[in-house]
Every structure is written in structure tokens, then in C-alpha cells.
Length: 330
Ligand code: HEM
Ligand SMILES: *[C@@H]1O[C@H](CO)[C@@H](O)[C@H](O)[C@H]1NC(C)=O
Image 1 (spheres, helix red, strand yellow):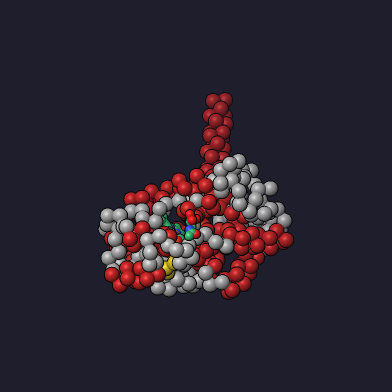
Image 2 (cartoon, protein in one colour):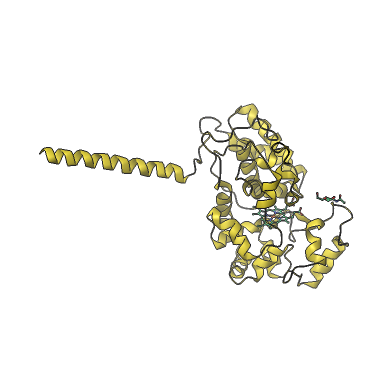
């Protein structure tokens, strides 16, 4: 009898430990983010952001592309922590914005404006990183792409460094192997990786980023469609641009989130090396074809890829801080 009780109590202990482990595992697996994170502290945050972005998108048709690029450039450098929005770096290092890889990033101050509106409803509760992620997601649906929800609860960085941005933001000429290295660690499969690059359905590329491929291409990177190349040379006529203001369109419909990007890639009209590479590599080409034909599947896979991009490597719990102003630490 004693022995049975002893074994029973041991069993209870084992069961309790296992159950606790599973529960903690589930919490961990979510990375501390959740879909109802602000349920008590700021229940209306998603609506506040949704309302706040409308006048910005309506008055500036290029704002949705600017916002969509934010999620990649924020999350790719020390995680999704709004480090992109900080105006200064540590000590004598410059902030991320000083990296050449962040050339063309604009409208960061708009996120500060949206955050200001959120602060007036729920002071000190919602991070700049969450506001940035929500605004970026709204850009997709505003431009005609899918609507979906993202988990919240990110916290903000207290530092930003140009060196980190230089090291982690990929060059425009990367091949498919390098592309996989960027996104596989975020848990994306091949289809999601091709889908997330579909963000290039919005916006523009500046001549500064185009002239290398146009006038001095790496091997295999040459433009293959000559009318496309001709038009790009009209837009960017000199090897060294006279100004940094000149640009070309990412796809034929740069303010509409659609699957035109994939048709352009199929037709040899990808703007950057990375864009045309997914059309040529035998692993990714079938997926490009699929998305070019089937916009619904593209939208579905893009949504899940966006969630993975925006939830990998986040500060949660008591790490980082909730910045009151997005452009500087508290
Ligand atoms: C690893 C892959 C990627 C590379 C090499 C890359 C590279 C570039 C480059 C060179 C530009 C042009 C910037 C300029 O000249 O102004 C650009 C624009 C853009 N990228 Fe990417 N990108 C990548 C992935 C992504 C991802 C994952 C997203 C978003 C989820 C994204 C969203 C955008 C958007 C929306 C623009 C247009 C920005 C505007 O018009 O203001 N890109 N990208
Ligand atoms: C264009 O921008 C680059 C990077 O910021 C800078 O080094 C260069 O001086 C600028 N060129 C002109 C003509 O303003």
C-alpha cells in the first residue's frame, strides 16, 4: 500500500511537470505574442491604426509602398523592434537609416504620428514595433491586397546601428540560395519566400539601385527583355545618376497590390536581380507561374509569410521598452 501511494504521488509529480512543460511550451512557441495582447490595455488599437492610416494613404499614393517596405527593413535588422525608426545610434555609430541599404525608406515620421494618436487613447501601452507592423499590414489591404490579422506584443529596441543594417539587409542582386538564407530562418517554406517577395508589387526602385544592373551587370544578371531595358535606360540615363530622385516602377501597377509582379517576372521584366532570379531558378519558377495565374493563392500564402516575417525575433516580456516617441528611446 505504501509503495502504491509512493508511486502514485510520483506519478502525480511527473504529470504536473509534464503539463507545466507543455503549457510553458505553448506560451514560448507563440514567442510571447498573441492576437489579443491589448485586450485589456488598449482594446481598440487595431481600429485606431486602421483609421489613422486612411488619410495618409489617401493623400499620398506612395505611402502604402513605403509602409510595406518598413516591415522587412525593421524585422530584418535585430528583429521587429522599431529600431528602424530611431534617429540616432549608440555612441559614435550611426543609426540604421544611415545604411545605404535603407536608401529610399521614407515616411518613418508617419508611424510616429500614428503612435501619437494611439498614445492619446492608451498612454504607454502599445509599442512602436506593433504600430509599425499594424500600419504595414494595413498598407497591403488598402492597396487591394489581403486583409489578415497579426499577433501583437512586440516591444521596442533601445538601440539602432548602421553596421547591423549593412550586415543584415540583403543586396538587390542576391540569388535564390541567398534569398532562402534570408527567409528560411524565419520558418518560411519556398512558396512563402516567393510570396513575400511579391511585396514588390508595390512601389518603385531608385536609379541609384538600378544602374549597376543596367550598365555594369554581374554575370547572369543582365536584363533579357530589351524593351524593358530600353525604358529603364530612359528613366536612368547615366551610370551615375545626376540626382537621387529618379526611379522606375517595381511592376506595371505600382500602387495596386495584385499579382502583376509575377507576370512581369515571368515576362523577363523583373526590376532587380533578385526579382528576375526567382523567375529563372528552377526551384522558384513554378511558384512564380502559379502566383501569376492564381491571385487568391498568392494572397493566402503572402498573408502567412507576412505573419512569419513579423513575428520572428521579437522582444517580449520585460525586454526592451515601450517607447513613447518612436524616433528616440525613453
Ligand atoms: C531579400 C529580398 C529583397 C531585396 C533584395 C529587396 C530589395 C529592394 C530594393 C533594392 C528596393 C528599391 C529601393 C529604392 O531604390 O528605393 C526595394 C523596394 C521595395 N521593397 Fe524590397 N527587397 C526584398 C524584399 C522585400 C520584402 C520582404 C518586402 C516586404 C515585405 C519588400 C518591400 C519592398 C517595397 C514595398 C518596395 C518599394 C518601396 C517604395 O516604393 O517606397 N522587399 N526592395
Ligand atoms: C545619393 O545618395 C547616396 C546615398 O545616400 C549619397 O552617397 C550620394 O551622395 C547621393 N547623391 C546625390 C547626387 O545626391
